[in-house]
Picture: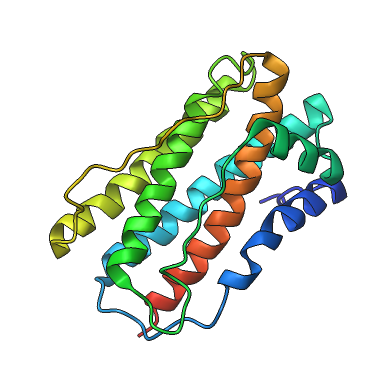
Length: 200
């Protein structure tokens, strides 16, 4: 089996820069929950799948359109209004299981909407975006089904609010890189929480 290709230095810097906003949330986790191991292991597998899709999208955007410079991405992030997701109920001293699952599901639901705004990004990238959106939808369904089993489904369905407008192909490509970058930072924290919960 051939080794996985290394990320470019520019892409590594972009991922690092995107993750800075989560540092304060990465406090020590509280006690592990009694969630089923089968659920947690399935979620970990789905996280890895979505991370792989997101990395593929980032690498294609960087390679094709040379949109990887961290400072440029900061400017684009502000101008395009691409939101980021908080998991404030997850990594804290007293982990709030119900709130954590809801925030996790809401975050995945938001990323589904953000990926929908990338429709028409380019014929070459469309299959990658579609696969990423499908895998996120599957992950969100897994979380929702577990909330149903726990009886913690919110009374109201989650809403995304206003999505950023990305009318031009250029904006959709930049938006795609930002969405993928934010998603990877979100998933790194999700992966950390799930690994903690899966501990015996």
